[in-house]
Length: 372
Image 1 (cartoon, rainbow, N blue to C red):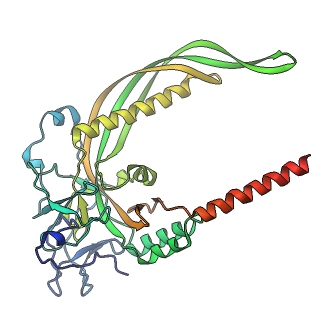
Image 2: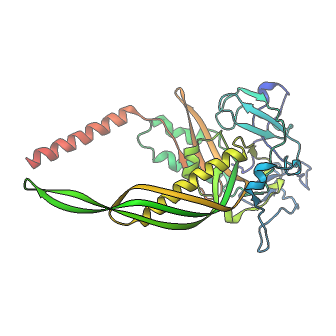
Image 3: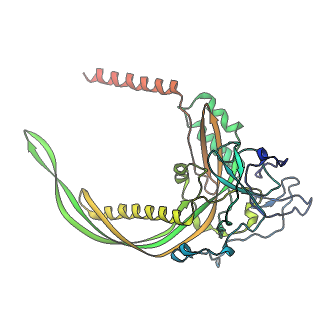
């Protein structure tokens, strides 16, 4: 098993225009073939002869500065100089899941990397996308990703027995997903009613009551790298399950890290992502303010927040994705390409579920019988 993506040849037909690889060319110093980023060796390696490219990629050092942009200014205008991939590209949109992928015209496949559909059409964008200025290099190798997926499969004991074989036969794809990250300082004022429990006896029974008192307070909180994924090709709940990504290890954008790997173009733009991040921040502020209320419970919590020092950046984060069809349904398993955290969905074996329910019912009946 290699850590480099499989090479395919194109015949130029629309049916063959599929997976998306956005990258510059990095030639092997030994045989002249194209070197790809190898997560196991953390270097550009030729998939044919195994030689390592001498190209020096951007690294993170003590003096590395990851660029942040003022959100208010960027919402008004993003210059064309900050757009594009710094490499030749072709874009396709999947008509099934709507994911937009970008790739080198010389390397194509036949299916969408995200849902497996063959319904792919050329996509022409009005303007080049806002270029990511930093990324997280892929660190988990394909071999390790498969080991993690096999282990995850084995834990799904309510899945059909045939389901286990999928870990050995299905294709695992390494993909860089687009993310927006947001920073902000939040100053919040809150009011609520704090509740304290007390007990009274009514008809020889103890009942719990709540004594409500007004409460108020303030809170200051700094949000750092609040993540909003700009992908529509991967289930958002699964992505939240494998987060966070270690954004403190970001490196400046270098197309060498993308060599040979699929990249998804963002489909949630900066405006929509900023709105989502504000919703996430507000939810977190409500949770933090709720912790300040005190008492045993609270109600009618109202939070008024103001935000300052708002900045953002556009990054790429790697995942391993397995999309498979079982019966008439499609399922995804996602692995964080940096930390190895895994999440996925699977079919249910209704025979196993029925047997489990019957077993629990028998245990309950035995317990009830013994209690009587």
